[in-house]
Image (cartoon, rainbow, N blue to C red; front, side, top):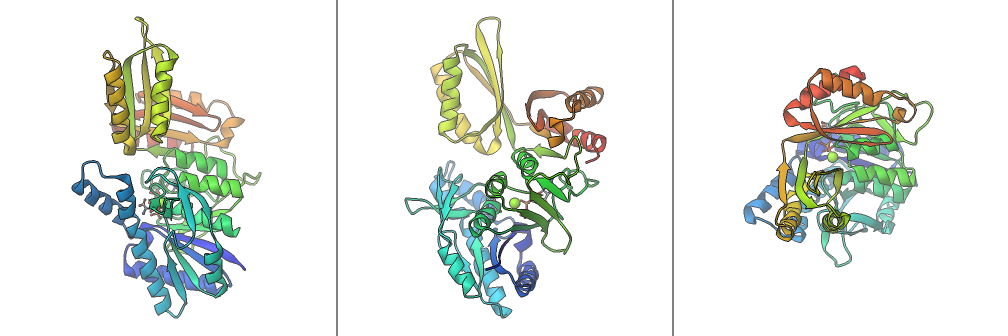
Length: 401
Ligand code: ADP
Ligand code: ASP
Ligand code: MG
């Protein structure tokens, strides 16, 4: 077999006309001798619209029912695309995540792929069919339909490619990975090749073009991922193991995370047990905490600040309510008008001065930041949302992104 996984995101399948265009592209690839698994997302903004309906139905809808609801978007796409392929004389079959053998575990709306029973997909491929799999969904041990978190069709695609030991091709509405989101900085340059490590960091720090866990899977199983335009036959970006041919700028990319909240807990008793209890509770709810800062006050308390995804606001509030009940002096403030701006680059391991350049840039341009964190290959700042465009333009032009 000569398998390949081709994934098309929501904007690439937003109407029948676009589906017809990608069907032609898939058929051409099949004619080149590939056994093709296609992964599709829900049409256009369907997932958002379904979530909106859920909010109208209930203030705090059950996550299990949300999964049941939002997984339907992808099912519409697989059936329509399969019909179009069949209509064009190409035998195709649509499979839901469950039918494609995708087994998941974890909390509803945040499931992880445990394993894939790939036999069924392989059988259809051997029969010469194009297999069209619903992205973003699977089935857990209880037999419930689950979803993989927003953008999760990328993860479905790379996990299937890992199981089939082939390349994953992610077709989307931009021509590849850029140094900065081209919608925020139109002069951004496309990157031809990027390492798994840098792409993973950029994705975790907010570059929505790829879902972070998909890169993690690609890295673990050494699956090359091509990101390219769904509508034009241009070269795209290859995500692969770092190699000496890759350009070594001090900074490869700039990511912006807009869905961030900054929570500050004032007046928490200073013993480390209290902070530990808080973070354990947050972890039990699978809330990912990102930046953390703790400062002592002169009267023996601590102020604790952290950032998290705004999608978890409801869960976080529930945990914080318990904290407030437990400690009567505690005051909690939540800042939603912030964004996280992060620069990423393997060059930072060997080249010094990136942080100094950024601090100077922010100082001369009056950009104040609240929290800062660093990793070996990134530096992140939380800044006021109103300063986002200014910061993006300054950093992108200074580092030639
Ligand atoms: P799809 O629906 O195909 O999954 P997404 O909307 O999830 O597409 O991702 C594509 C979008 O990611 C682009 O439209 C672009 O605005 C955004 N994006 C963010 N950061 C980057 C980046 N560094 N390079 C390219 N696109 C980016
Ligand atoms: N439809 C899902 C979402 O909008 C999954 C995806 O597009 O990858 O998040
Ligand atoms: Mg996406």
